[in-house]
Length: 472
Image (cartoon, rainbow, N blue to C red; front, side, top):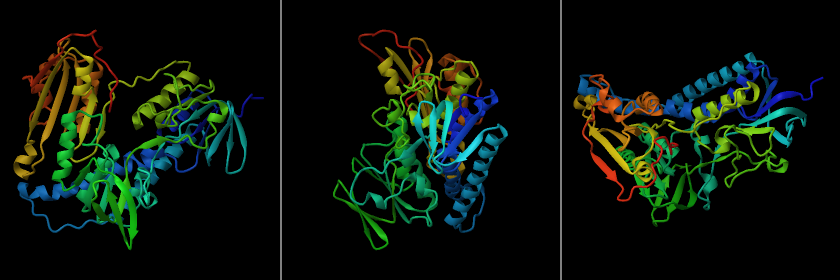
């Protein structure tokens, strides 16, 4: 008779949990997964996938306007929010079913309901009270948006969880925040036709990104019509008839139809019973884990956003796979959070990998910067004022490329390939020796030969490594 009901019990059927369950089952483990909402997690249901679909929808606004420069006559256009929401829902429902079916084909038992941890090797299903034992427990519950700042009337606002299913598109939208989610939705809704304002605590968008790229995204938002209120946050939200009246710290008040709070996310560990069984959590509630995703309780592991290491879907997938390889495949596999490319899907979009200029200058005695800003070929006929900006940050002593930053059309697609070169330790000379693909915007990465800036420390410090974790 088996010592436990399962070899692995996973709480959370998002990207990390599903990958871990499938790989562990492939090694012969008896696996169960509990999910209280929908299979697929944040990315599939209320994150990356529906957001990217809305990004595509919003960009048709520009395409219609620019078509005339290429000889097209486009009749008056009309956008149907309800049609987009319905199409989005069909797609995420299809993807969720695929996730569920893949678990079934792998032999994983799916439990629809919330689970909590009772002990190092025991969980309880709340819907029916069942207690289930498992040799290993994996926490993969992800993160959730926070309703901040804590001001009167904040319950009248929505978060990114609710923005995808609004019954009607807001004519006037206030976005609070300046990170990924805030700038992406500001960019989306202003192109779909909303009048968008953005308010944030900081003096610019996208804290932690390269300063030139931050300014480029900010300028693009403003050029698209987004009204920005930096260094100002709401002090109160009040419902007046069908409108919301928002007071800002500047003394200004805004009348809007909807307020989107996009000021951050926190790990979803509340109510799981983790602290009661000795699992250490950090100051924001994240599960503290080692390089193999093991918590302070040896039989309990955690992967993905719930660990607050790097909140990106591909990282959760990589961590889930590495966990299964380590625990069930007898292949100890730590996950390195270095040279991780990421993208911000504003319009234009931002793709980055590696160090910002500021990080490189802090780490290295000599830093070379190569940067170009140009009008892409498409804009010469379309009349678009958008520019593409590319920046390469190089260790001036070793010639190793430390970071690449691209703001422009197709930046996300380009940075994925560039990340391979950066991870392999490519030098600027390797970029220079690569033959360009012409005519493309990407060719600028291999034709930037003239250094735009060099920064040297007056007093050199110890030699810093070329590879450092990405901030993005």
